Image (cartoon, rainbow, N blue to C red; front, side, top):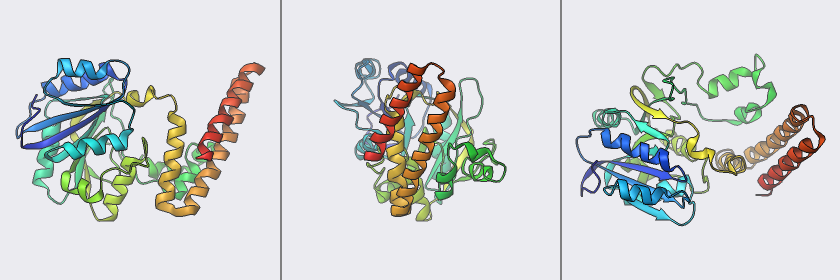
Length: 310
């Protein structure tokens, strides 16, 4: 595994937070992947308590390992690694992925042959071999009105969700996309630097959406490549994060405030309240025991208060 060359065509950026075994499997897959042209691998351990950093240091000494005493989040962590990277192409790679041999080289070759594209992303597959249909269009205010609400499945309203989730795309052929899956995303360094990297206010979620939207607004293009394949243990890198829901909601508010102004922020806050009332009703149906129902609703009130107080 190449790690410390002065010149690198590709810089692979990996964040790890309490995903020791997945991180080691991610690095083992890269070790098995031949790559011509020079590459480096940078890994930031975000204050893991499971021995991830020590395991990486012992097993993969060629990886440029950085340690943080606290969890810096996805945006800040990747920005820090990108600042140190030397490659002309950056690859943001989740620790819960396993790159198939030749996948990254195919992506890099595409960008070198097509200078009109700012970035690209490979096909993601689940452990059972099924294709993860992860590309999306940008979330607009209409998406705010329907996302995760019970009426999202109504015949006419469903068109909004179908468009957002790109249900018209089977992910089995190449095409231009607005928002590729962020688990493995390659972008030119010059583009990254021009856009200023990821927005640190979007700590864990929506930072890749925001980056792609800003890229699109300046006329940049992203290509989804169905040929190269990356195994993705979907959700494994965030499953251990206890306050995931609160963070997601806060980042959602911040994203829409940034791109849709005060009205967008108020609309998201209003819909979060509606979604909480929907969940309140569902808790009543799920929990027949009065005590468990009371505890679940108390937790719901706490989460909503924390989110809206921010």
